[in-house]
Length: 295
Image (cartoon, rainbow, N blue to C red; front, side):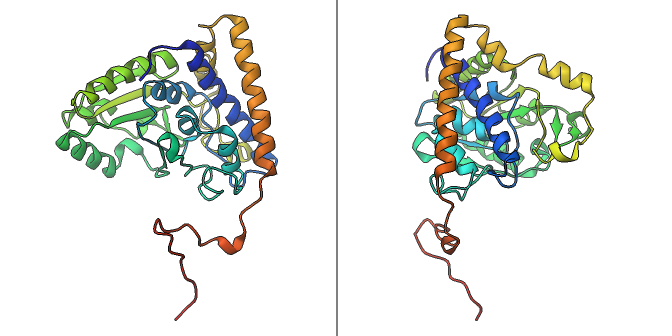
């Protein structure tokens, strides 16, 4: 775990922001099939949380998980190749946007289950076992105000923190738009857990700047008032982190990130697609190949 490093935090949020914007361009170009769930606006959470972790710490993400993978240290070029379905990707093009993993940096992969998140029974079961066994796991709720198109107020009874405290778990809320604030609260929680304190919950309050899914770019769903979107965008984690840097240092980071992503796009598009004949390979950890055919 490291202390505060404004330059590192800014680089991470800037990398995630520009990675997502490049990915959206590739969706529109037809290079990323099926679209993505953009992480725009929520970058400060992944950056802040992962800045408080060690390389050996393990993380798992969600359907909106590109930022988690990048913040933990995965190669942006191989991550982008994964989104483009190329064999040069992190998972040979088989994980895609919602299931990318990189064991080398402690990313176990994303779990794309949706449907209410904090209201799902599996989460409450996880809370129960983690608290009962005092497992050192940090649950991070990225509360962007919506369950797809449903406002949280219309789907969540009680409070998010209350779900954790009901199991005897400490819970804290933090401004998810401020990467440093997220890093601080995460560092404190991680220190307690390393000392045997058991699981904790952080509710990071944030705002999703873009669509729930890029499919919305085509259908133009109308469920968020323009003034709400404008207010949400007024607190941009990239600007909040960037304001803590000297302008020259910020410009240098921006240029470096741009160059890195130029190379990442080139690498991703140069990679071959998987051979359809190998579609059933890598289904089992043992190496066993699945068989086809009737009987």
